[in-house]
Image 1 (cartoon, rainbow, N blue to C red):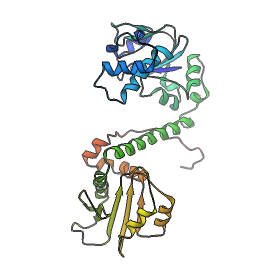
Image 2 (image 1 turned 120 degrees about the horizontal axis):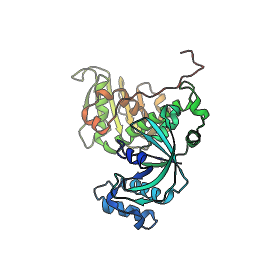
Image 3 (image 1 turned 60 degrees about the vertical axis):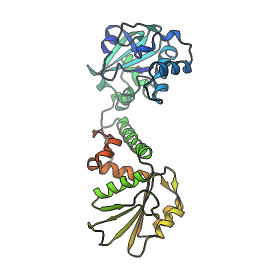
Image 4 (image 1 turned 30 degrees about the horizontal axis):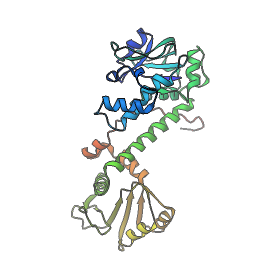
Length: 333
């Protein structure tokens, strides 16, 4: 069973429903039946036709076209979530691939639409799966629920109330994890080396600290010195070292930083990666040494995101949304 979208704003919706078909774009590629049934041929065609596309996007777009032309078969089932009427249209592919340059989306297949079902009839997990960011994709996790809807039946999952639907919590967790992964990936990619020290200094500023950041180059192991007063004269003195690596920071680095921390001072080691067990055990024995790994950097980023410097919001474009939260029936809250 396939899921398909009619454009980011539903541009091809009328073509789908009035023309009893499904279709994909990339009109400039022409009739795809002229290409050999080979993924590399499709990649080459997309790259040649759209030279401005980013390199990583070419296999994705070529994959959509290849699946539509060769992997999809007559008799396959299809689900189309319509943005305009908030229904999910369910049908069966009844035609082979055809190219029609007069259509909004020229690469098409005839479909017999069997049933349209309101989105509210589906579990949150099914809605999340059908909301894939890819134009054409296979439905796997909730395919039974979509088939039940196509047959006019009510699946067990979609029949459950919002408060007991186990997919609500799963979807919320997936969205949150995807956001955290995005933040960590962007920080690792765009803030390698000294720029990461500036970023950590910005977070410390938002926590109420004034900061002095060492200039690029040899820093003798100390990247940032945060302090509570503007002149940096009042204790406590904090010495911060940052690591933009995605790997593990071990005991040698942790011990080296602590060796630069005098009596009455504090040490802080921040990394985008993780800490080895010996490093964590070493820090646990030192009351004036603190470790912050990549996961905690992400948590701090989310906590202080609204106040982040605009240059960092440009690197981490996020939008505040509300997501459903499953209710724990065993909880007193």
